[in-house]
Image 1 (cartoon, rainbow, N blue to C red):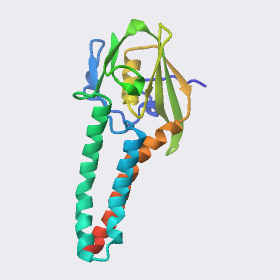
Image 2: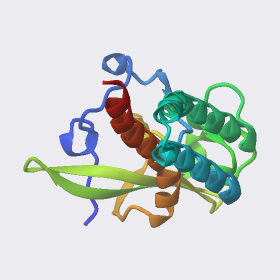
Image 3: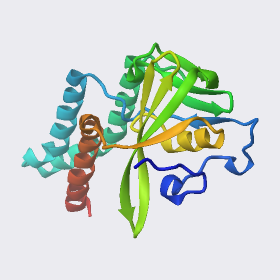
Image 4: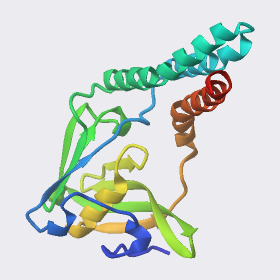
Length: 226
């Protein structure tokens, strides 16, 4: 059954904070930061980064020479920020990102950063209120300490032209966006859904090499240096 989104609902907006939200009014034009950390790279580049990071992380285990193993542990610890910086640069190059990605929400329009993620040219996409027919908020409910929490999965922006633009929670701050859309009284509808399995490869590609690096080199650092 579809649920109604209320601004004061803890089930929808638990732990929500938007700078200046106590002073929002009908004239507000709110800016929201958009992170691109989970933007997918090509399969080839993702696989290469994955293999290199995992290989280097476990490489000290193959050295019989303790001093060489120590050196590799120190190199790997310094490699982690390098990996994140390289991935950040590759993402910006692939998606032609310039400057900081931001969404803007006001009573008149919703402005979102566009690129291949939503199959649009790389620029700011302006969607004015009178262009939008309805917005369908897809969510998944979970129990947390005896309370229901509705996790927003995606938003489908249905335009009057018949076009549908889908915003995925992996790439957009949807809880904040939906709060503002409700605040400005956009035509919101809800639909229960499931988290897409297609997001799993991107999550693994980003997090698994980092976790392996931290876990393996943390244990080796403790063994060799403490």
